[in-house]
Amino acid sequence: MIKMMRKPLIGCTTYHKTSDQNPPIDIYGLMPAYLKAIVAAGGVPVMIPLGLSESDLQEIIQQMDGILLPGGGDIEPSVYQGQGNAKVYGVDTDRDRVEFVVARTAVAQQKPLLAICRGVQVLNVALGGSLWEDVELLMPGAMHHEHLNSHPRSHLAHTVTIEPDSLLAQQLGRTETAVNSLHHQGIRRLAEDLRATAVAPDGLIEGVEVIDHPYAVGVQWHPENLIHNAPHMLGLFRGLVEAAFEPVVSYS
Image (cartoon, rainbow, N blue to C red; front, side):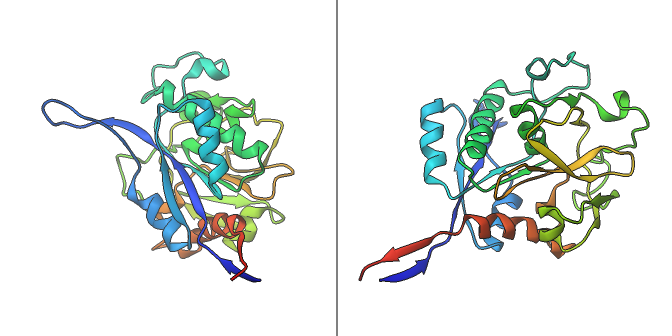
């Protein structure tokens, strides 16, 4: 009997876009930076399309070794009792539905999980938390967090302070780091099953992990855009891939 290691399959949820062709074409996709970061960490990315039934999604998740929830547009505010602020944009209710199923199933199955930007917000809402619909407008003392259109995606906008005993500190190898900041929403009420592991200078939660889960980490920034100029950020993807590794037993 020989134990061999195969590369883990990391299921990545996707977004819906419409091309500018004539006539327009609907596309399910994902920014390549996420896929390249998973590959660099030793995993194999598998894109999960929208539009699937809950049972089909659960079947896919069962086949995956780990899950990535990426960034994107805003979550439908009514899901977390929001007020529908005018700054809410990019809502896709089918994406919300799909990612809530994926997040809850990954947590229930103790599946390794990395949630990024929108992904950490999805994780929080899926587990019963709520969001600031616009951090700068509604959160007292908030700093400016949305640098999406004013700076490159790799721009280091501010620092975060990280809990020393967290998976986040373990994977990054530090308790403080500079991060990029491409979001206008953020965690308001933290879900009971989540622990806050990092905060911005204004107190906004920027990192979480699922309590009593082997590896379920979420960050509010975009580490996939930082792996070249801040190589320690690849540690988050390595942590996901390492947690997803399972030996394949061969009897040959």
